[in-house]
View 1 (cartoon, protein in one colour):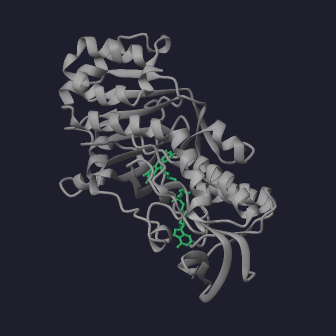
View 2 (tube, helix red, strand yellow):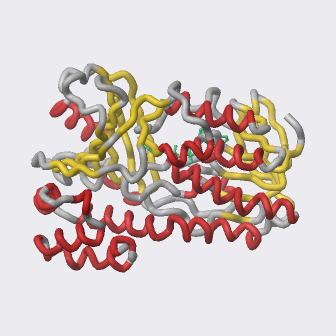
View 3 (tube, protein in one colour):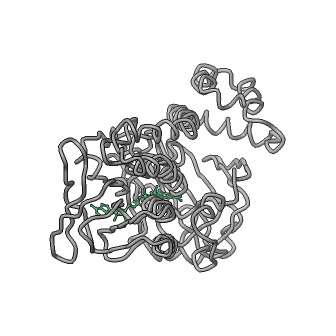
Length: 398
Ligand SMILES: Cc1cc2nc3c(=O)[nH]c(=O)nc-3n(C[C@H](O)[C@H](O)[C@H](O)COP(=O)(O)OP(=O)(O)OC[C@H]3O[C@@H](n4cnc5c(N)ncnc54)[C@H](O)[C@@H]3O)c2cc1C
């Protein structure tokens, strides 16, 4: 390991590797560090993501693509199903192999990758971040960098060391639990990702997902807001669902973890440092999907940071266009998705079931979001007040 780099990226998840790929492609000297002994494990993910974003960074490879999905289904507690095509081609990946492939791509582009290497503090030059103190294979190192990228995920300490507020409120934080189940042949539609919603009997304030990895295997998981986890834990809700739908299936792996669903933090840069991915709360505030949004966050950060480094100016001001680019690209979408989550959370299970029944009878494929909203509101006028928030985001009227 050298004593100085242009960029040190902390965390080799999808966002960190995406940042390292873009920085190395620009000819910068990049160190990507990962505190775990192995990249990608333990997996804390339902593993669904979109092809379009993935392909921007790495060639598709059957070694990490488990399945292709054609539809998403929203399933109510009373058994009604609304099928919607995914907004882009969706794949279920093997995160362990996928994360490793992304890091390997960063190496191919010229980055240096180190596992078992944790950032334990920042090095400062006055009020500017100037590097990272590392713990690598039991030894401490001070490594200087012209820019540090905090891509250290949901538990991000790096952004906090830099003075950024990244701790979400309890209810703006999803607690997740997931089993990879086997033995599901005949009980699974492998072409469809399912979201099961029911405030009282499925997951209060959250949902259960069934993401098929093949015709006999699926990731089945639940998220609920952190504040609800004490009453009945996410794992208990998951066990209830699995008993009801997949009795007798075998559990191949257990996953738990948290996801901030607040929408991205406002300040994502300070002098000498940018924050990307889950560390910046860039995951979708409705579904909590964060793989591709984190990678896109990293790309936008590098689009600002690379020219800033070339000019020799990594001040907060010089890095600020990254925050603006994020808001221009994803801000409106995040606001709308957050509003939808809050509306669903406030609805009773009965009202939500009635809504799904209405939507199930509409020709959704031929309707715009605005038309769907109007059709739903004409049958459920009590929702008008709630929908106002959504309409003011402007997104549904497009
Ligand atoms: C149960 C569950 C299911 C999910 N399902 C999906 C899904 O189906 N689809 C989807 O798109 N998203 C899903 N997500 C969210 C998704 O996993 C995250 O949004 C995504 O992994 C974020 O990528 P990231 O690179 O920002 O962070 P991470 O993938 O969390 O990577 C951060 C990395 O930083 C490392 N690190 C942390 N601190 C340090 C340090 N001090 N020094 C060095 N390294 C450090 C960590 O070890 C980790 O490897 C799910 C999340 C959970 C919890």
